[in-house]
Length: 400
Image 1 (cartoon, rainbow, N blue to C red):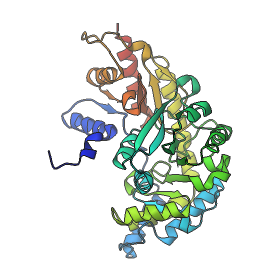
Image 2 (cartoon, rainbow, N blue to C red):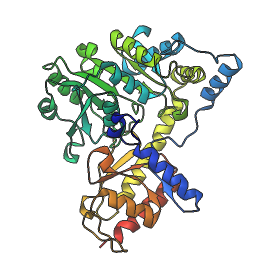
Image 3 (cartoon, helix red, strand yellow):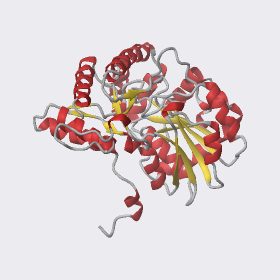
């Protein structure tokens, strides 16, 4: 339609949400489909958090709040940053938003001018490039390799920086690969950034608590504290506390940036939900044992998926350090023929075959910026994962 924004033509709907819509429709039509595309914990929100939300309603906490969060919620976020990351933020350096996606988008809108570039290591969370485009910036994709565990290398970062580079987005542990950066690896990237004072760092740490095999999580400022004026540290309650629908994300960063983000939010959504903020306070300040218990369950699921996909013909998987995804390499399957005679020309073709022939829904690597791979979410029951992986084994074995 002619009256729609030209900017809108640059972006596409979220592939993950589109896949979920398709899976829902197929199930409604009576199809036997296993959906492993959505990045959402299958656990319920812990009871003490739900009860805090209910109390907030009963106590009348149903009014507008400060545009970027109540002082109590900001204090809880500051406590979390100190307890978990040894970072000191005043409440004036804290932003609370309607989900981590809004936190990221606010920061981009508040800072990007036309021609400003945002470095995004690939594979990346599928929304990063489109959010940059909507905010008026230019996504600059830096491809990584499975041989380097999908991690941005210092030389690659240095080579990618131009006079127009304003941001580097870091996501550790990563969606879609599960790769996480060690403190030493972050320090090496910090050495590069010290040579480029115009470049800022956006750290998306949403999977911080979902790490395995004793991996010690570090956020970027732990490795390069002297760059604090150029770093925003972003997190939220969605993944660790199974609170995706509550929509609370937050950030700690330089006060001028936090104020600018509040200005953006004041003219978009205004304050995050007051009830959800009360629940987030309970999540961040309450008992944390359930997070560790659920992380152990996720690790067991990861190990089962790795074992079963390792037995699937032509599939290779890197062992994830965290999050709840496996990013599976299907390069050896490209060019093979399905039982129906179709040629697998790329990862999108393989994912289509998997859905149509075996009823397993995953997301092609194409939408994450690196092919030929697919992303499988193991945020599902062990029984479901065993069934899905068995079907994948059958699907790959049938290719000729």
